[in-house]
Length: 600
Image 1 (cartoon, rainbow, N blue to C red):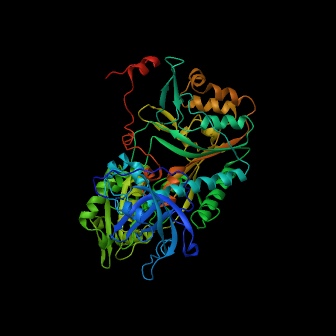
Image 2: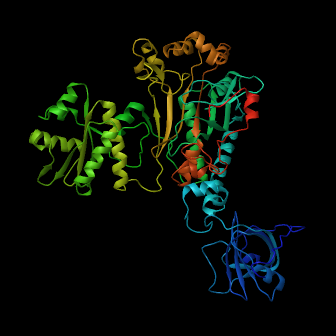
Image 3: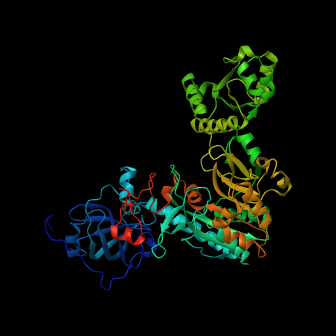
């Protein structure tokens, strides 16, 4: 068949696929089989034509031999990569020495007795088989081609298995899966809402839910007691590399529980997931750490527990020094804190230390001091400001010995913690201190309930306005609200927050008091949350719950770097879909029906 000859496209007719391309073995020798899939690669040797046929389950080598079927062999000369075909044939063992033991089907081949060409393809914009050799922009534009890659498909197969495992677990624990509305009321929950104009009620808008928070509380008031949903959520926020405007949560709520009750369910679920999907056991119970302890020890409320290098408070020793910068910070209520980098003295040149200093300043610090501990003493601009006994005391407190590096920040406690927490991660990455394949969970509990917003000059809820305060802290609400702790908890895995939740306010008077502290008047509260405030008056049980970031969890379990890789059709950091060209303009007629017009 010549290059210019018409290629006949066949219909399946009565052909039915008997096997997938990943299941035939030597145990199937002599069987008649019908396979269907895409041409992954081809070797045309003239007399024999070898095709690697691929479907979602694997690859099988098929052989066109003119002595077996001359017509199929003749047509097979035209086949090219990514064409869609169906073949009939007999399973035969490969010749000795030609086996490929790295693949399940590598000991057999299919000798073709019939061929149907189901579709051709234009030349793909990038190679589907083999190494990734295209930009992310091109791969997202032709995402359906990238989804054909076995390594990409395997991620989505794992995602499916994870969701199925979660459903099986929660169903077995008495949870009911209940769907909540996508078209709902706009309520302030942190990020901006995506708004949807109503054609029937012109001038009015729905909002896409940032989470099912209010509805799952209503389900508890409605007596459902145990609810869950694997649900899409939407947030119109400025995107970072690991955020998407639409994402998936495993959302659940429980009545008649405290923090322990919710956390125990998630711990058991994580144990089942890692046991069945990863063949790994995780410690039970999972470690718990209060928010302030996490900040003081690791500089973040998402501590990566896979390595040490904890923050050390050197304020007492620094106060005895003659270094004016340290003393001024301490006298102003600040602290002097450090991390010790074992064997870091030789690993970090002056240029490297300048880079770390610049990163610390970006994180809010005024600068970075450093000490290299050598056999003969300190190598540092600080050494003239410390007495010998204080140098020894600082070495001992920081656990530093010869060859080690001490990195020091002096600032307000929060800035010192956060900047050193960032440096801790950066140093660990540069020195490859983070063990590959390790999984370390930790619960972070008792977050601050409220924080002061300098821009809006008012208190805001750290989580959301429905989070219950720690009972012993309730007396502080009026006089010292920023000291009140929340009955909130986050589950952190390998330095990533994969889920968070809280015990909710279920007493109407406490909820109204909370909204008042946030500067929300009774009239505003009725407009924004009136339906929930009304429902709380009708016998709301104590309740709490949690939402698990499903995309992030899958990404960690699949060993990929971004949640985009575990979302079938993701958007870019500018919230655009390169595949469909969304968002896009719509017809003026549609806008008129909605009573809308655009400025451009």
